[in-house]
Image (cartoon, rainbow, N blue to C red):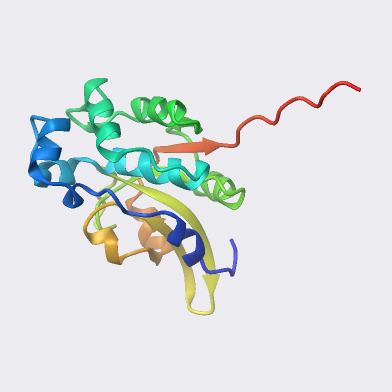
Length: 193
């Protein structure tokens, strides 16, 4: 945990290229079976991949190309985005990652402290009513303040446009236990002398 505000890193993770930013014709060309509204309600996984690639590599891939690729490769199933498919998309864009179902909040926060965000499965708007999962956000870290401990995240939903941080207990109460953890690229071997 850090006492540093997470707002600096949140500024790097942009929500640009949300489906609301495109015309119906552009969305229809990329994903003919969905309109902008439906795409906006089902694209959290792709939006998280977009944000993580941008944060880790500094490159923002074309959002609609990511959407089309995700849908065409069977990455979206009856239960939402298939984590292994999102891992493949991240890999295609130079971000190593792995899907996990057995990590802990400290595991995820350690990755964040190394500058590696995670995509986590939570419930939209983080209710504390026992529901877990069904939505994906980018976990950016946790910080302690005199008033409590807060988790910083980037949520690609319309609600997330104005919500970047909530109390840790509320955040973790909504987490399903599943995540996609990004990993640092392997360091190249030193040149022989």
